[in-house]
Image (cartoon, rainbow over all chains, first blue to last red; front, side, top):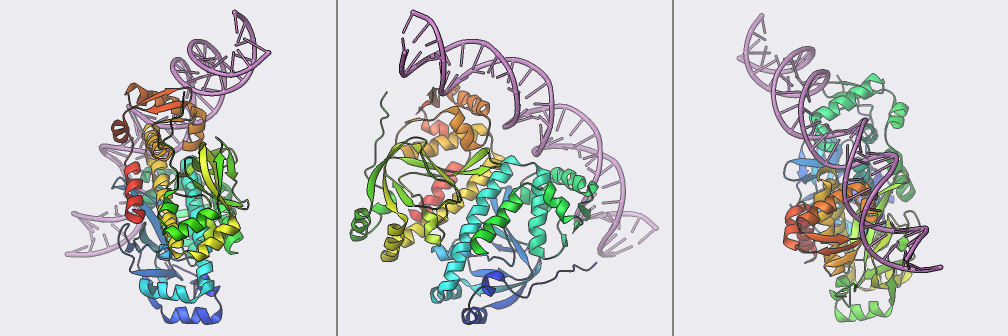
Length: 235
Length: 235
DNA sequence: TGTCGTCTGTATGCTAGCGCACGTAGTTGG
DNA sequence: CCAACTACGTGCGCTAGCATACAGACGACA
């Protein structure tokens, strides 16, 4: 089966820059391919590179009590990984793992910081993106506390569909359980419920979104809230 | 009963600045008194002032589904409110309400931004503080998901004791329930359990921490994690 | 001193999600 | 073609926390 990504050539943060800045930045980037489940950084470790996903997407997970975890961010071609470098701290705050394989642009931390000093527009954009990331982190915290697994799953599928730029992607129940901080069985039940309602189809990790509108209705308001937050600040 | 605050004269972020920068900043501040339960800003609204608590502390709450809420940050004299201004966005991301009455330093948003441009040290400190705030936000998200109310309450009491600079402070069960995103009855039970274990004493909103070490043992690891995060980045 | 409002304690029935264990269906590979 | 592995489905007993309701306790103030 083909993965059918409508791969985006570039990254929205970079696209928004003046042509000169953008070209300059691209000249410092290398094109790489991210592999599924690849770990790009671990909490507390040095950040060696920043990543601008183009056709891939990355999950930020905060580990808890050694074993469990909770996703606190999802980065597609609308964002970047390594943002915290611009706060003058070169330690990664979260676990970053590749959720959707595909192309990305990569840059060394040093090059990134140097470029950041050159382009005021880049700086401004990234600050805005950081603000949005914080808002979404808080939103996720609240969502995780108050909403049932089924709604949270629906939200996650929508967010992922947006970042995969495809109605098809691959992710197992075990993985989802880790991401959402619940048991695998909880995901199985929720996914089944969504499937019975003809919103998605699901077999051995291959997810297809069938009814996007229905899925939005099944999700909690957090999905919409996130989109609005993004649009208001970066739109 | 006296509130017995060992009131700190100043704010740690300001104290860490070179004397000149600090004086300059203080000259732009006004000394004010924050009242209990006072709302300093609402999500989506313009930020008019930034606040540096000295003897007071402030709770950041993200509202959810109109009614409920969840605390995503706690600001004492180790931090400040209005940090996001330095990201070039003048909209408040959260609800800020005064949790502990007392003195604070206040500055207009415009003055803050202007001063920020003058002092590189201030900028660097605040960026580091922002990084820590983000880490703690993620920690709170995970904590809220995985830890039981009793442990979360213990953590909150410790965090608050640190910021109140006193083993005595005032907060009702209803308030705590809102902050921790649980029912009031859940707080009642948890607080009772802690009281029976002689870790705190509690009557009509008047809390006294009796056994700090015991409380630390009763809390989840998140309290320690937060402190370590703060110490590593800002210590 | 009584009354009212605020704060805390307790009871009952309910549900989402947990831990554990086992069963089943596709997939891969010798 | 069989074995091993991966991924999904189900069942059972359990617990934390939910919603609601009501009762007692303390304090302020008339």
